[in-house]
Structure formats: C-alpha cells, structure tokens
Image (tube, rainbow, N blue to C red; front, side, top):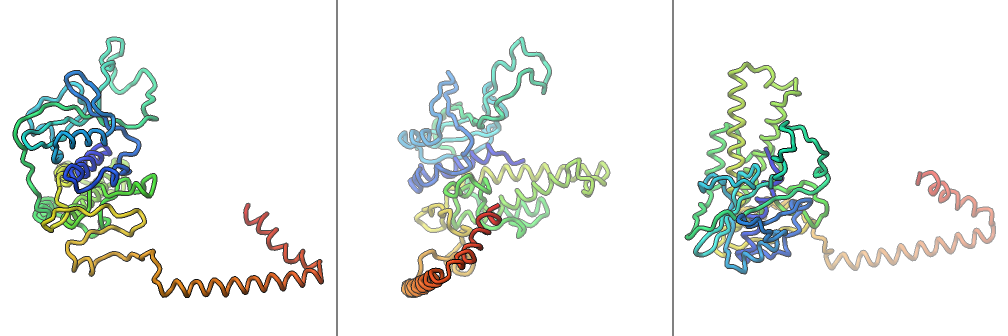
Length: 363
C-alpha cells in the first residue's frame, strides 16, 4: 500500500536530481508539503554519526562534492545485507558522482532497548505508553557503501510501460477515472505555497503522472473491495480459488506500484526538447497544472485559467464606474442627512436593520 515515507523518497530523489543538475534551485521546492511533519536524518553507518538532520544540507553537501543525480532502487538489488539499524528498510537511495556512487539505505531506526532483557517477550503489547504518536515521523538514511564506477539507471518508455501494465492487470492505463493532471500529495497541504506535484511535472512526465494516479486509484479500490468489513463486496462471495486469483492480482498491482514509483523518482527528463530543462512548479494560485506533451496540445487541452492581470481597456472602465458609484453614495448620504435633520425619529427606522444584523445575524 501507499506509504508516506515512500512518497517523501520519490519527492527527494526527483526534485533533488533537478537541483543537482542545476535545473531547479532549492528555494523553488524545499517547502514541498510532502516533507511537512517529518524529519529526514542522514547518518554514517560505521559510528552512527549524524551527518545532516535536514535534506537541504545533505543535498547541498552532495552538490558541493560533485554529485550529479539521485536514483531510487530496491536495497535487494545491491546484494547488501540489511543492516541491524534498518527497520523495514526496503529501499536504497543512490547518489551518483562522475567516478563513483554512494548507496544509502532508507528506513526507520529500531531502538536497541526493544531487545532489553527487562522487556518481556510479548510482541505487540507495549509495557510503556508510546508518546511517539504525537511526534513527527523520522526517515533515517545510512550511507552503507561507496562503490567505484557509474551505476546505470535506464530511462523509461512511459507509453510502453503503460501498455505492459494494462496487459498484465487487464485494466485501462492511464485511466480516465483517475484525477487528471499531476499527482499532488498531500492533496490538501498545510499552506498554498507548499502545493507541489509529488514529482516534477513536464512534457515527459505527463504519462508518468497518469500511470501512477491510475495505479493509486486501483489500489484504493482493491483495498475497499477486499476489506473484511465490506459485506457488500463481490470479494466476500468468492470461493477459495476465486479469492486466490483476486489476491494474486492485488500482489501484482502492488508490484507495479513499486516499479512505477521508482521509475517516477528516477525520471530526470522533464521536457522532450534538447535543452533537457524543467519548468518550475506552478504557483499555488494557478489552475490544474496539466503539462501538455506539445505546444499544439497545450493550446488544445490547456485547462481553463483566468489571467489575474486585468486588460488595460477594462481598467479605465472600472475606474469610471467606481467614481460614479461613489458620487451616488455621497448624494444619498447627503439626502438622508437632511431628512433625519427634519424628522429625527426616522433615525430609528434607518438604524433598525443594522441593529438586527448586528445582534441576530452575527449569532
């Protein structure tokens, strides 16, 4: 299933690569809402020394050291035994340099006192209250190994990948039922300026966003259909063989999600043009930032977006209307002033609506 830690890794690798390639400044994306409520720590495995407690410092030092990109992989690909400090760490983040690469393991540090002799061997039953529920999540990265040479990261043919997934799972990819445009996580960030796509959006990644959004939708639907409390689901009426087929389909779906997530994180091409540049993330006030695959498609499929700048011709019209309305209001006030001066009791009638509004409407 979807993991907030995995999403942070996708954002860190994809945006971090654009930063290392001088395509995107840190100030343009480090406020990404996906990192809110979590701390990213980077440690040295040998002595567990804390190298950086902020991903911006880690990326900054990597760039100063000559790093050219990042990539996300499964830890099992490198034949490295899972270190004792890694708790359910399935992923590895690779920092690429011109003549070598570093392998960082991603996971959650396991407290050593969980194995303390005074702690009873009763799994799942804590003997002390767990106050970490009120604290932020921590993603721990350990530098496991540094290897010489370059690590090849294959580019993805997104249309061919979509076809393979659709054939294997017998579904439409990308699906028209999935939310259009780039994926935004969290869907509602704490602040408007923290709203960024999960990974950078560009002409090359239009299909990538569509594939991942479709798979996320299928995962949510599958989880709902197979939930043991969903009595109305078709899944509850299946026999053992039928349920086994559906479960196998779900495992293949999860496998494709992992594969696509890593490929989205590793996609560094954001434009089909030769300059290999990447457009900056759209401002929060912009409309749905669907990145078209060509200029012609941009004109044909561009989402409705109203330019906040008023045309010059309408500026003068609005100013004239403002002056006329102001003059009318001033004349009305002057007229009411003469009427109230002649008949003071009318002030009660004029003030009654305001008193009713202040007392009753406010409540």
